[in-house]
Image (cartoon, rainbow, N blue to C red; front, side):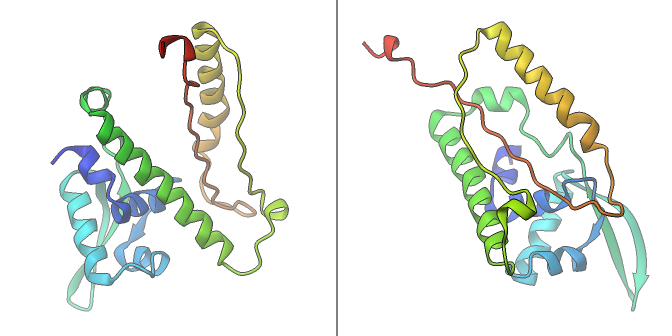
Amino acid sequence: MASSEILLHPVRLRIVQTFLGDRALTTSQLAAELDDVPAGSLYRHVALLADAGILRVAAERRVRGSVERTYTVAHAAASIAPAELAAMTPEQHSQAFLAFSAGLIADFDRYLASGTPDLVRDGVGYNINAMWLTDTEFLEFARDLTMVFQPRLANGPGKGRKRRIAANVILPAPDKSKAT
């Protein structure tokens, strides 16, 4: 099964996202966070992700006669390789983007349902911008974003830290001159 087929299933995508931020979770902890996913379904998806090398066992311990595994995400395996991206059809890309967008919408809906949301207090934001950039300027922009994100991705849980999800989408605007 291609990594895109594995990763772009809505439940598996949520499972992988739950591990973002270098989290180590048991299936029980994962089930508590994804409490709207039936246990049997969750265990099947975790097994598939582990078999595919996307989740890896970080620790095991005996609990009441069974083995409890703690998983982490294998970041290199939890992405779609450039060659696979290049081989995807426009329809597959549309489905992949739909899964990505649906995941964001579901995350936002869960945030709104979590009690008393306050977007300013919680640092929640969403916006869209347009920039005029040459290819070189765009590469510099992408490098700058990486330089901003990279050191923060190394932060672990700690006093006063909240796990925050940052998602981005970069699209070129339609080129009207090519449509004629």
